[in-house]
Length: 308
Ligand code: NCD
Image (cartoon, rainbow, N blue to C red; front, side, top):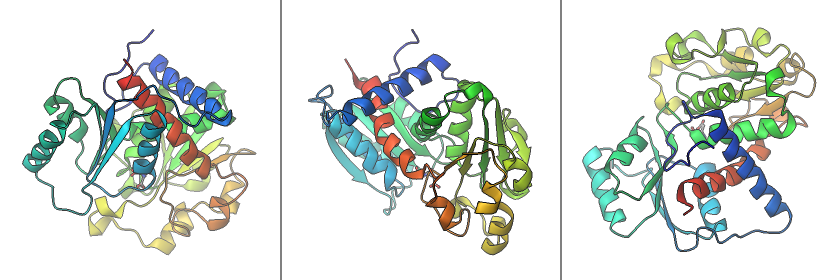
């Protein structure tokens, strides 16, 4: 058996067995909930700190719900709108909070690498879980996307998946590629305008496209990404109408994909910019299922790093 994780900062280089164990655990928790068990006590007496330096709706709420459903106490520290951008201040904040005897810190920060810095600075015994750092990693999103695909299409060795949009600035794309390639997905395609594609060496696994009609042909799942304007220089910003015409997912383009293709998006979605409303709300959309799976994946991760 692959060793239990103490922290989760990235999916990069995690063994397939570890990823599968987390997905299996998330599924077992989902089944338990479906049978009426809303609350477990496995983390009773433990304290989880949600330390969010960037705004978040889904991720923060679902980490909070996940911790509570496992019986842990939760403290939320939202710093998204304050000016704690200096490292010094963050560690001061951290040590202040640690003095309150935490067991895990769930962190989101605009600077890539912050969770690993916390692993180095945190007092021993405190687990760190990455809830998104810069454009680098968003491991629980990678896991929930893999879980959502697996639920419908467990035959990963036959699957074609396309990720389309602002790949360059997307931590979701990076973690999705790490998860899906570890799990043996047959073909991962990356599509976006040249200016929003990452360097070649950063994504050794993906086949690259700049034409979305070609990229979506015969795929089994399409993961759409938002234009992450908060991470762009003004010169990178595309014209939104022109962008939708070339890279937006509408019914016509979805028709080029394989029959029953899963439509996914980490949210928040921008209707009419990267995805048409009728597709986001359509029969093939798995977007709300992704949100639901997010809670179970985060329960599985907290259980993994905190269970005695
Ligand atoms: C993503 C994120 O924050 O990286 N959202 C999320 O976690 N639900 C993607 C995004 O913000 O576009």
